[in-house]
Each structure stands twice: as structure tokens, then as C-alpha cells.
Amino acid sequence: MYRIATLNLQNFACPPYAWYDWEAIYSAEQWQMKTQWLQRLWQQAHTDVLALQEVFSVEALQRLCAQAGLDYLLSAGQPTMVDQHIFTAPVVALASRYPLTELTLPSVDQAWLTQLQLSGFKDSREPLLARLQLPGIGDIDICVVHLKSRRPDKQLSGPLARVKSEQQRLLEAAILWQRLALHHAQAARPLLLCGDFNDELSSPLLQPLLALDASLRLQDAAHLVDGSIRPPTHYYGAHGKVLDYLLCSQEFDPRYHHAVAEVVGYQVFDEHLVRPQYALHGHSSDHALVQLIVQPRR
Image (cartoon, rainbow, N blue to C red):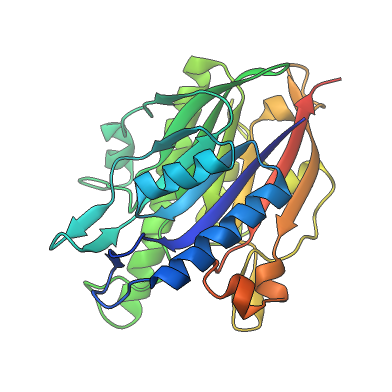
């Protein structure tokens, strides 16, 4: 069995570097608290493959993952930094116990943009696509994403600012599915889409990811193990929502005649959100770790 998870690290920026604002810097003690929490969490989850979001300090993450036995790490480029001190744009990453090969997503087709009446398109955060081999299952592809946040667009004001943000998330979901569908058809391998979607999967903005009338059919891993009710993965005050997902192509559904694996477990590690202790969780993350357990098809 293999454990594959996703986690938004929330501002993973090693001091003395700041995130977004020049005063937003962890002290040495705060950074130690954050990294020790991550080490405990990964040890508890026994994760084999880990999709990560909000990564600023890639080299520090690589060292931390290696200590957890996740010796292979890829990131979607390098985070943006200004004034040699302030990170302004994070990247996504993928860590694994098994060798990873970075892949290239198909380019955005100009015909799609024309149909959407767009002159151009750019993801708010570049997705990462990689291939790895799981003994007993074979080669699988994993795409890591961090879709556009709910924060209003800074270039607009009033209701239009939020509309612009939601429009971007919808476009990211729709164009991502198109690119993944093309890749899946060409590669003919099982595919997992993992990450922070910044919305609930039932949202109209994410429905393009669940297209049914095509060769690529993505399903929520939780539903494959009868997990239609599951804990929130993010809280805003007392209100919780599921924003972090592991979506599986049909090759992970044992009802599919070409299935190579099946999802046999789904876990949410949320103690730091529902029973926080400052000494342990004071600088953890505002997201839960979400994990599926997969095994070769019987």
C-alpha cells in the first residue's frame, strides 16, 4: 500500500526571508516550531508521496523532506523574490520516497482561448506534473496545483474584485482539465490531481474538473472509499470547508475495466486545527493534511 497526501504549508519561508511583507519573518524559535510540527505530522501519516503548496524556501523544504525519507523533490520553478528579502509568489512542490521525473503539461491551446474569448491566460501559480513508479502498480502521473485564492483581485475594487478572482479560479480549473485530458490521452497512465483548490468541489467554479463526457474522468478519492462526509480541511473562524483534494483518474476505480489500483483509505490529519496547542501548533498551517491510501488492484 502507498500513502499519497497533499498539504498547504502556509508561508513556508525560512528566516531571514519574509513572505509578502518585510515584517513577516519567522523567528528562529517560530521556524523550529513549524518544522518540528511538520516532522511529527509526516511521521504520523507515514506519507510516501506528498504534494505541497505555499512553498517559498525550496532548499529548506528539500532538507526537511529528506529527513523524513522523502529524498526526491521537484518544484514548479522558483518563488518570486523582491529586494533580495521578500518572497511575493510561492510555488508548488512534490516530495517522494520514489524517484520522480518532471513532465511538461501540454501548452494552452490558442483555440481554447479563442472559444473563451480570451487573448491570453496565465495560472496564478504554475502547476507541477511528474511521473513516478510505484512497485506493484507501475508508472503514475501526479499533478500538483494551488488554484487562485478567494482574495479579491488587487487591481480592481468593489464587487468586481471578487468576481475577477472567481473568474480566474474558474478559468484555471477549466484550462487545467483540458491540458490534463490531452496529457492523459497521450501518456495512457493513471493520473492524480492533488492540491489546494481554494473552493469546495461542489462549487460551480470547479465543475470543469469533473467532466463526465470525456476520456479523463476525475473522482474525489474520498468518494471512492464511501467518504461522502469528511472533516473540513480549512477553517475561517468556526466555519470549516473542504478545500484540499486528491482527485483520481478512472484507473484508480476498481469498477473500471482497465483499473490498475484502488483507493482503500482516506485520512484527514487536522488535530492542529480542531485541538490546537500553541506549543505544538502555534506556527503549523491553516490547512489539514489530506491523504489517500492506494494499493494494486486485486
